[in-house]
Length: 295
Ligand code: NAP
Image (tube, rainbow, N blue to C red; front, side):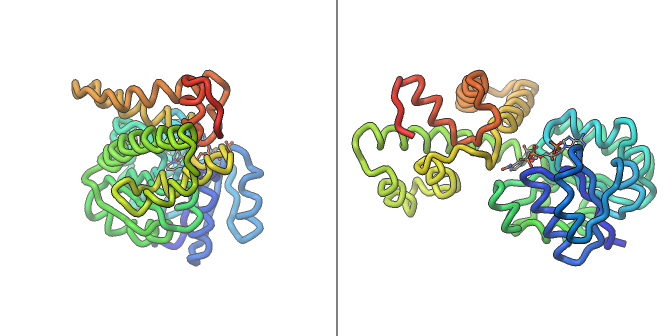
């Protein structure tokens, strides 16, 4: 039943993730807005489908990882979308970081077709996707989790059940709140080190094993030091995630000032034309506020 996997969204994350599914021996069906991004997978044996609906009709498990909530809405609920073609007993898994309430909406549409739905956003970045070491946060019925766990394990190392549909996204919101904090902390330390004349790389290597150690310091600080501001994780996507978390916080009448500050700084970077750079470019916002240039 689980042998035919459909995969929609072959960007920075999806292309590597779909590749692992192919390597694991599943039959793979693929669809992406820009067809050329599927070429390599097709040359390795994946089958191109001309719409989400065609892919849904051919696959037992459908996985999506597109960009924004409106993209998720389109591939599921839009014309030629998954919801129109999915049939009884099939499972769809959305791994995009998106709006929790949209997950509930899609779940109720798919339930009417007697199909199953899970939200399963990921953490671990482009590196985690390439190395199949992602952390996956699943929101679904426990029985559905048991069924999808094997295929999720092909893409990730830590596969967690977070509760019913939408709770994977809520866990991912917590993840992004932590990342916002570590991003600003690491960026400020890098600028501070450069300004006071430290060897910045040596500073990073010195503090990494201690209490300051984190993924951002390990993976993004080295990119800043070598002047690499390509994504990785795009600023536009992070602004989307922080906006979703702040939207949820507002709904719950919760005040998250640290998150709001970091979102403002990234919004300034987007206004400066850096929206499609990697999140490590946060140092550029600090540099421009301080009228300094180190990286
Ligand atoms: P990306 O490189 O922009 O990939 C998104 C892919 O989805 C693109 O290939 C895009 O097509 C495709 N797509 C968008 N709308 C579509 C539609 N309606 N129909 C078919 N395909 C569609 O983004 P990414 O970095 O892989 O991120 C994907 C998601 O994962 C985002 O929600 C992001 O927040 C989340 N995420 C990213 C990271 C990271 O480090 N990159 C980490 C964790 C989570 P085109 O090729 O035409 O653009």
